[in-house]
Amino acid sequence: MSALRVLSVASEVFPLIKTGGLADVAGALPGALAPLGIAVTTLLPGYPPVMDRLPGAKVVHRWQDLFGGPAALVSAEATGLALLVLDAPHLYRRSGGPYQDAHGADWTDNAQRFAALAFVAAELGIGLLGDTAPDILHAHDWQAALAPVYLHFARADQPRRPATIVTIHNIAFQGQFPAGLLETLRLPPEAFTIEGVEYYGQIGFLKGGLALADRITTVSQTYAIEIQGSEMGMGLEGLLHHRSEVLSGILNGVDTEIWNPATDRHLVAQYDAQRLDDRQGNRAALQKRFGLAADAPGPLVAVVSRLSWQKGMDLLLAALPRLIADGGQLALLGAGDAALQAEFAAAATRHPGQVAAVFGYDEALSHLVQGGADMILVPSRFEPCGLTQLYGLRYGAVPLVARVGGLADTIIDANDAALAAGVATGFQFAPVAVHALEAALTRAARVYRDKATWRALQQRGMASDVSWRRPARQYAELYRSLAERR
Ligand code: ADP
Image 1 (tube, protein in one colour):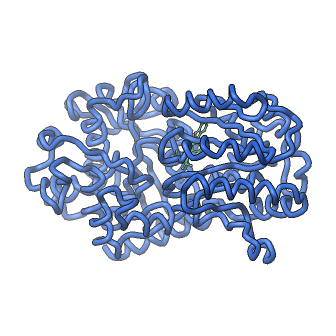
Image 2 (image 1 turned 90 degrees about the horizontal axis):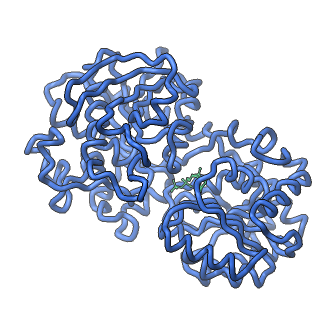
Image 3 (image 1 turned 60 degrees about the vertical axis):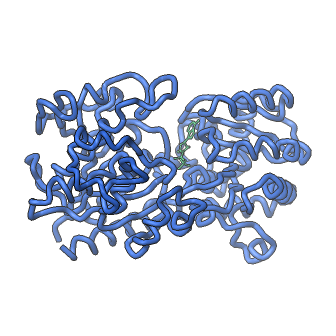
């Protein structure tokens, strides 16, 4: 059987460029699919940190004017991935983040920046750029979501088109831009309808992709249901409900080589489920790094997160007195909202030795946190899949999570029945409110005091399969079913 060819289109790909879980997925899925006979090429923008890491890259296509300036498509192998990088200096070569400048303001030309990415994806999709056309075009999030739109409208004359999938990693980010940009984005007037990109009078990138993709996936089954309702659909629930027959959920996995406590060089002490005592070295190092006291009686609770409303960080602030009263400690590694940051800094000053925060993005430290903390806390208001709780499972940092989205699908709550049956892997709380979080923290602190039960929780978590194996099989099945239909 010849390999099925997939063009994966993403605005961030680990380890080249990352702001969140999308990068981890885009970086790890190709490797997990290769043994299943799926050949993935990944298209991403040529941000400076990406262009710096492309040895032996070769130009496969050039444009004199791609959405406002000259551009080149370069092909390269890097970090085990087959890459196509869109090198458009006027769009991507600038300091700052992939979506925002150094002050946290969205780049004012984000519409052009990501329309260009999707436009090129569509050109590749129909084989216009020399490369053999892929069987499947898999677009991730709003930044890539116009690809099926371009295929549908601008290239309607092309006989051979790939099947298209749009994956929603977070429906909170939709990419909405003024209607006046239609022509600039090389979209015909007929694209601006309810069946196309029109969305409350604006151009909706994600909306257009969801309307026109052959299939829609999101990153957990629970989230696939949640986004069909008004509470979590963020305006797209009607469309998603309408398209529910082509919508499904496939959980994310984690890269089990990068995230392996037995070999992780970011840890002070490597360990596995049979050598959990060795974890103590990491716990002590973590306390020292964060300036936490060494002798607290309760669990060392950790957070590794973007600091935002979505992540429920305000709930955690409100529940801190309970955590401390239970003898626990908090180590927070986070970046984002300045007001939240200031509040955590103030909490750390109020509770020296018990609450500590490191602000910034620190991949290496995030490993030590998972390898040393007793618990990893994820109190999100909504969470499409969530990766931090999966790392927690793998590292024996018992997850305490809100019962939403992928958190609900990956953690088995340690209620009495689950403990008695020996299946629990963590703690869930619902509704997503302070009193429920407090109750779960107290419940966890109680179980923590029972060392044998706690160890069993850790070991079961570590035995859970959080790898890409199962999700990769599900994507492969989806790709094959779509390819067969064509
Ligand atoms: P989201 O994509 O919404 O941010 P996920 O849980 O899916 O949430 O993925 C977050 C990823 O980013 C995880 O790999 C997590 O370890 C990482 N991460 C988040 N904040 C930080 C930080 N301050 N330092 C290091 N890694 C972080």
